[in-house]
Length: 355
Image (tube, rainbow, N blue to C red; front, side):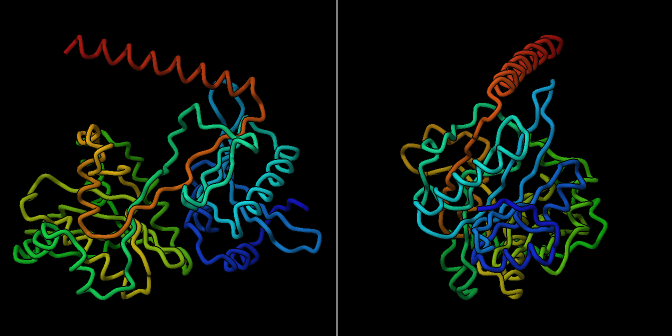
């Protein structure tokens, strides 16, 4: 087998077309976006001796702090075939990749579920020991859009339906945003500050919004009440899935329940465009079950309750897997992260004492 870099967009799109399910994070456009924000992107194909494509991966790389090398990261890739076949192909990929490309470690996050998983430890992968702040989720909520609007409403929680109708009665209006996303950014920045969620610079969202193409759709929807923008959502469409990637809302006029109508209108728009499912991009695992009662006060509890109210099913991903091929640098990175964590706790305590 041969590992070959793919540099032509038409070739990449053609190879991807062979997969029935593909994440937007493996699209050519997403890779171009990641380049714009500072990542190196490498698109590779694993071919057999008859030049048939067996594995397709878009990887991102960035330098790690304090001379600890670099990480190669594979977001949400898909691979056809049974468990044994997938394991064989990934094992071969790792062998060829680590011979050809330098790095501290390789981090892989597959797009299949934990029930379809392979034996990662048998291939030398370990659970992650360092946090890199990648924008990923381990569990998501999927709402099917292949049913009628009436069925969608029927599958919702009664309170969700009530809040949608309440927003309608209050005359909340949902609009698609133009190219100026300043109002979108203002809302998500407010939400990030309120919920202590990381928000990127406006330049980040501008670059993503303006990168849309006929293959990768990026849209912003905003709920308006009394001429005030009070809720917003940025969605990404690729293949048959529309993903709710970023959003926010204002505490102003929260009693009109604008986020409920906002997402209902987005879902109706997605149906009209032919998307088959709405990916809510992250929930708390097993929310509402006995084993998660102790987590009720987590930061995802309210978000999870909101998303699940629209009906759908939970999807648990395989997980995150690290292959370390420079053990010394990996250990040094762990020490650096631990030191930074201690410093952050110390500085936070000092700030609290001065208040």
